[in-house]
Image (cartoon, rainbow, N blue to C red; front, side):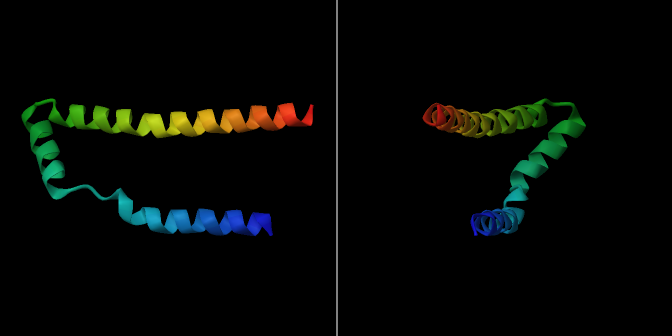
Length: 76
């Protein structure tokens, strides 16, 4: 039963994340034109995206590690 709940949650997350992969038209246009003209605006946008993406994964990893250590200490 627990496996089914996890599967359904994962399925819903995948289905609802499909719409989240879009980019605003102005950002895309500015990035494309700046990249063609040799400007570094597109590089700055990409760096900002990577920077913003890093911290949620870092937090999830820290929470996962804390849960693992807590369960391991509880068993011992």
